[in-house]
Length: 191
Image (cartoon, rainbow, N blue to C red; front, side):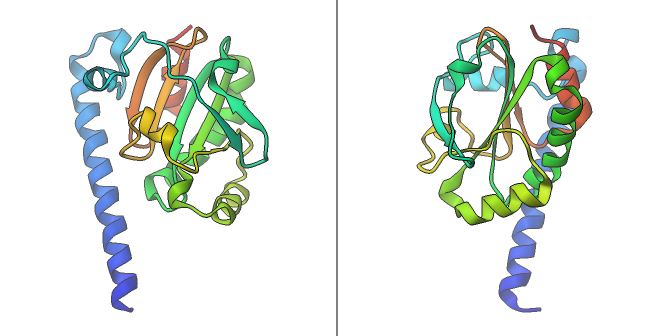
């Protein structure tokens, strides 16, 4: 095994351990939350950063991998899972099948749209296309080429997701991967 490959594996393992540790810490903290705050809800942390629970989600327009424009404000009336990810991110790879399963099984019935913003500044479009094909993703994949939307939503650690209600208000911020049960819980508890 070459030193470069070993180094990449080591970095990926360290990132996975760090994300797992953060998620575990946040899950451990949830025992102190009341029923309305159950889950890995970090909007309270984001309060100091300008993205508060109950505030209007910042609007943006990006072009999807399919070449279609998508504007967050045009999704008002639907619940939105706004996810930030990259193809090289191991926790993102773990999360994507859960999001796709949820999208296929519940999105229509729950009035939900998943918008998975690829932080393209670190990805080549061909890599994103291959990733989408390999994972069979059917929800919109906007391309944040300049990283401006990711910055606006403070998506420093990926994956980072926001759960936005039908009025366009932020209800939850989740740092780290979600599974299908978490997604269902977050979505079912908002209007």
